Length: 75
Figure 1 (cartoon, one colour):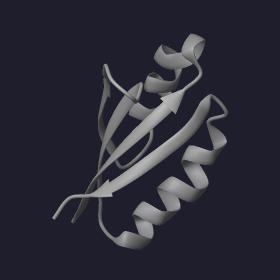
Figure 2 (cartoon, rainbow, N blue to C red; figure 1 turned 60 degrees about the vertical axis):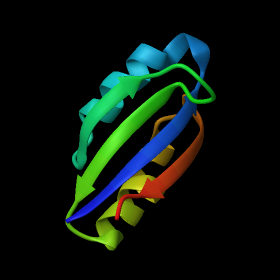
Figure 3 (cartoon, rainbow, N blue to C red; figure 1 turned 135 degrees about the horizontal axis):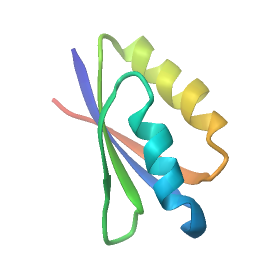
């Protein structure tokens, strides 16, 4: 099991909508609206690094309101 944390900057008017889309995405177990440099934090739990790569490069790119992400692997 691969666990990671994705930090996201999102268009200000679409934070709630984007959080809902992320929460519905397979592999994302939790989504939080946070203060600080990022708008949303998503907790990801997938089977493999390939699944994580697919989630980040294919699924997140389809959410237009996401402006920037930073993905951190949990050890």
